[in-house]
Image (tube, rainbow, N blue to C red; front, side, top):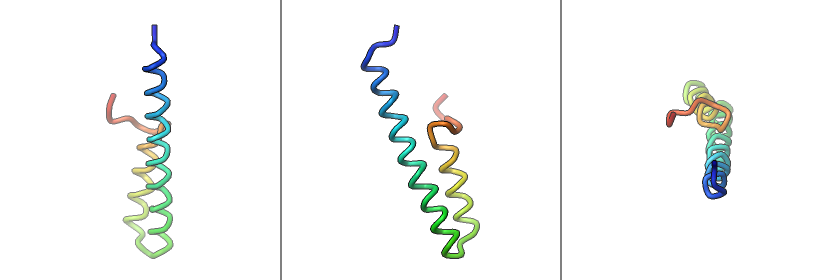
Length: 59
C-alpha cells in the first residue's frame, strides 16, 4: 500500500528532474549555437539521461 505522502514525493521528484533536464538541454543547445560542439553534446546527453523518462542512477 502506497501512502499519499510517498506518491506526492514521487511526483515532486519527477517534476524536479524534468526541470533540471530541460535546463541542461537548453544550455546544451545554447552551447551548440555558440560553437562549443563537445560541451553542447555533453549537456544534451546528460539532460536526456537525467529526465524522468531517462536512466536513473538511484536505482
